[in-house]
Length: 315
Ligand code: FO1
Image (cartoon, rainbow, N blue to C red):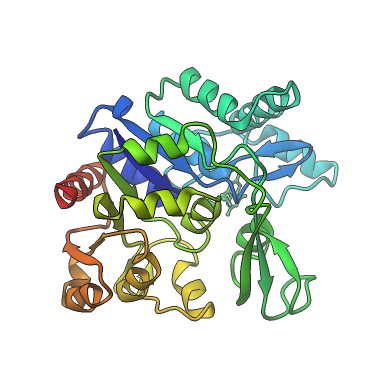
């Protein structure tokens, strides 16, 4: 069994590559739910949905979220009513949120609903939320943005979508993490995994919440020699999203060395891109083994090759 700690797009791409080289049923993805939000009374789980849509071959690879070939009839009608449309929910995507919200309202856990969505879409990877308890990423902004003053605390989607992550961040915290428990099967999967993979996700906003659920970081750290993380930073930049600027704003190096320093307590190996090969000795100086491989998953074949490189690094 392989376990992947997963966030959004980068994780989904690596998982899609992984299932080309190992049996999907041998993979467990522990997915970030810190991005989750209730909007229009609907429970939206963006990172879970990005992973499920990608593994089902349904994902909109242009936007990196939602469903391909989507229609926007509801959003257009909602806009005409003056409703909230800053967070775009396509017609097919809405079915997911309607189904999830109804099941949760009937008393199902997020794990149960996620398993049902995976089964409905023929996804054999075991997709687990990091927790069935609410954990929400909250960010304190360092400068005024939109209607928010400097020092305001905003929700993840407000930061990421409404403000377009175009604002400096003073601090991040995961509301509800202390009281949360790992979802059923998460710790067992980590304990019995042949390899634990830290996906190329945002170290602060995607892997941060997963590791903040009590017990997860400790159980992963116990397997440190079997843990291989993939740097989401290549040549000092994030391939997508705000990871590089966020690392700098929070006082870290926006480089593979900074990522190695952040991950050193739980990841024994860090896969870095060939562009960062010269930094391998600096990564190893942080106590983390450096493995150099192409990490930009511009095609599914490259994603499969990266998955192979990760498995080789662990063996
Ligand atoms: N990201 C956007 O930038 N704009 C959107 O309108 C948007 C809608 C959306 C709807 C469903 C969903 O699952 C994800 C959505 N995302 C959108 C992405 C979302 O912000 C994710 O949390 C990020 O991809 C980070 O993981």
